[in-house]
Image (cartoon, rainbow, N blue to C red):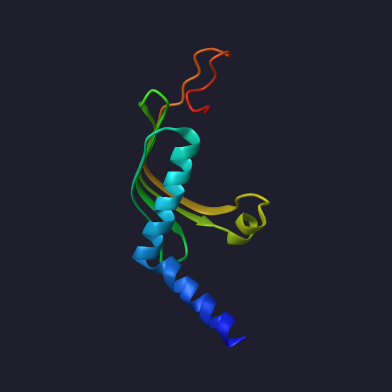
Length: 116
């Protein structure tokens, strides 16, 4: 039992540390880049003291290297249990600063510029 408690404590320290958060963010960016084949940049992402997720300087490009989404700052209060279960995403609070989104649909055959 003590081993499980120590493991959970060390896992929480890893997730809360800047080093651990940079590893997690790097893995997430590499995953999305691999799936979409587009440019993604992120200045920083971390879990705040309140337990919210904070993202700063997020850039998502489309297949033509145009800006799809750019946000200066985004802070979201997410419920973790639905994410763990895979039942959905529950957002309780959202603070968004500086959003630019360019979503285009030229015709029904080409679709949207974010369909990968």
